[in-house]
Image (cartoon, chains in turn blue, orange):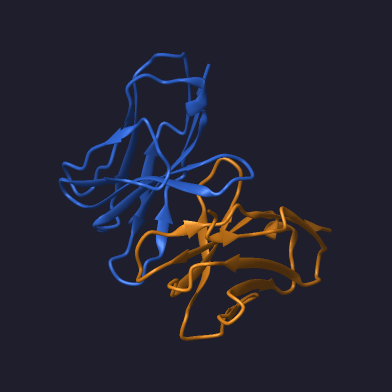
Length: 112
Length: 111
């Protein structure tokens, strides 16, 4: 079944740790996105990719980095986590055509 | 500068009645509009969309209306059900590219 997988679902870590949030998809879509969302706020685009070896920063400045070595995989890395990184991180794919986004279940990150 | 605005943070409706969620946008180049529903600690799920060449799109209990001259769209849910209680996000895009989201409206449907 076509789907988007995000792991972990929940993560609580200490300040200064390096973390990688995983996102894999079997949707067959070329375009992938990372959004960050806090309660009561918009979804903010932090990174996107239109294909293998193509990554761009989004509208919201972020200290995270991403890579796209395989079409199915779009991990997000924080080299040194801080409490300000506490948020929900949402991975999405986009159909080549009309533009509808499909989201994974998200990773809820808490940095202590 | 928020290009997509949802000015009502929350809305409370009685079960069986109509829910109307509103959204305004500023970018006249937006040509595709979507509504997503989100539960806490989960990803948004797609509800309904509309292209700028239309002014109405219907899917079961959900109808989206687009008023291009006013740069305004709305989502109507009829009849509202307790399971509709969630956060609803309006989103817009230009030429099918990156989506821009509003801040969401919390809908509570009381039984």
